[in-house]
Length: 93
Image 1 (cartoon, rainbow, N blue to C red):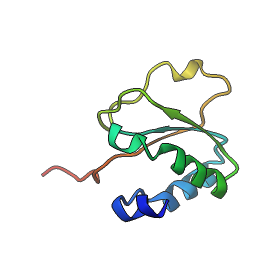
Image 2 (tube, rainbow, N blue to C red):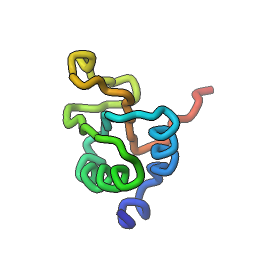
Image 3 (cartoon, helix red, strand yellow):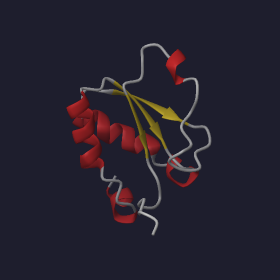
Image 4 (cartoon, rainbow, N blue to C red):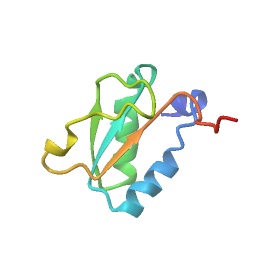
């Protein structure tokens, strides 16, 4: 996990806080291809910090607007979707 933190600022403490504030039990994590190799380490970290369960979306992810469809059919219901990215989203001027 330390290796990941050296390369990327994934703001995992903010993720933990959001999960706890929402009282989310089942969370879907979505990663771009470059971060998918770290997904299991990230889930392990988040599981230790929360009491939640996690699903990992291994389909394509090309940005914040690329949310998977058909998630409403998953039972139990997904409480929260968290997308990770390589870059910070900045306002366009």
